[in-house]
Length: 179
Length: 236
Image (cartoon, rainbow over all chains, first blue to last red; front, top):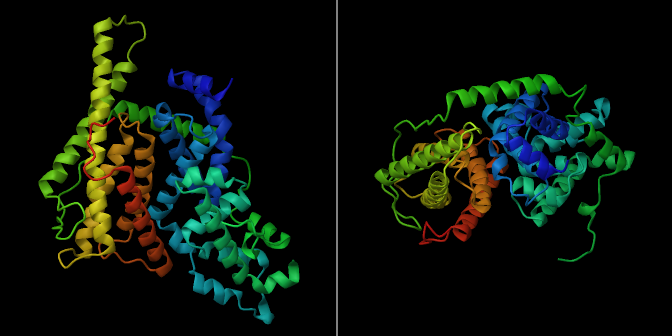
């Protein structure tokens, strides 16, 4: 069954088609929500909200983008809005200046690379972090990211390159040792 | 644009890429069934409640003295909200008609009337969204260059009002213009940030604030491009 048939069946109220639609997309949506939120409960909440919205708006899907991309765009919006409203981001975000401080090597107790990477990614501006995680970590293309975030493909590339630049600066100490 | 590769375009070194892959890595299985049950419960609950319209609380109004499209009086904003609400109510009515018992034989005149209603609903949505984008444009322009008449608290209240009507428009089944829907989504993102910044419109992180202003400026340009001033509302 192709997507158009599936959508038609979902819109006609076919419960099995609804579940199939959900099963086809839930893993990707959940992964993305988890990557952006870093919290299992929040990821579940945002995934649920994404599908509630997707079912409500499915009749408006015109096929301009792949169905999975369309759902991911709802997921990104839902997750980013949700994170802002729960203020979770503020708890984790250390600020870029602080990340630079983290990056200054202290030979006595050098934090683990993963931990520094976490701080550096947390410290990225939201737009950069979202694009970096979607592209470099989750494997979305710039076209898919552009559709999901409502930005041009070129803007997605620019944000990715700036994100990488900031990460390279924040992790400069590690680059020589681990590259 | 050149095809030259600069260092920033290169992927991160393997060790760093591996560390990045560990960032917020989902662990364990996706709780599919639990989430599905919750989704079904929410959908059932929503359809049982029908369309719930939440009008904003009375909030301080902004007297705009230097806008690009002219000042928009408070009454007009309420008229727009009322229009938006009507569009959504009409859309919901059409949806409920469409979802009615399939065994009912529908007469041709009724189908024709439903189509006419659907068209009227789409036109009304278009008109409401045009007015809404007008307000949004004014607010975003004011945000970037606030005058003496606008306090932070007033701008914050204004953002909250706009966010509510943005969501009403987004939830309306009558809205089928993909460009405007995309614009509404982006507008929602910016407005949420403004509302979250609180009545003092303060954000702790200067980078975030800069990005927000940058987003607002880009959005302003897109609104002006998508919904040019003076564009007939019933164009589509």
